[in-house]
Amino acid sequence: EKLKLVMKPRLTNIRKFVRCYLEVSSCSFEIIIQAHVILTRFLKKTQWELRPTNWRVLTLISLGLAQKCQEENSVSPIDLTELYPIYSTRDYIQLEITFLRLLDYECNVCHRDFMSVKGLFIRKSQI
Image 1 (cartoon, rainbow, N blue to C red):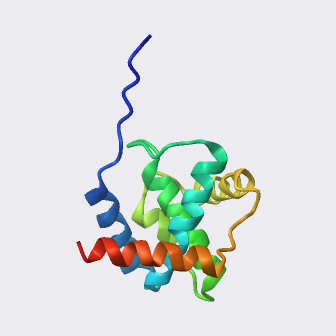
Image 2: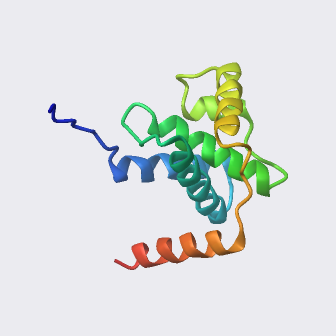
Image 3: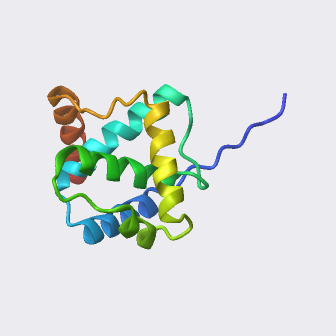
């Protein structure tokens, strides 16, 4: 049997990336919680893992979708391409559509899931 080595993204890099998103988008902290629920749901449904090659785009799409679902003035794809310029606006929109299809368009976050993740975030911040 071959040993399968899976690289995980560094949590510090994810935190920095999310902070940058918060600065660009001016969204609320609740959006981060909803994005976490959406991303977790996506990963379970697709059986994908966060890797150094995909975590930024998956995180960015999750944050953008969470914000679109909750706030009137969500960040535009043009702003998102400033945050992660590897993709064009057109690419980002296509990635978002593909993400939604793979997610079966399940972007709503119920109160129970939201509160569960919020509690997790609060506990982790106290450590």
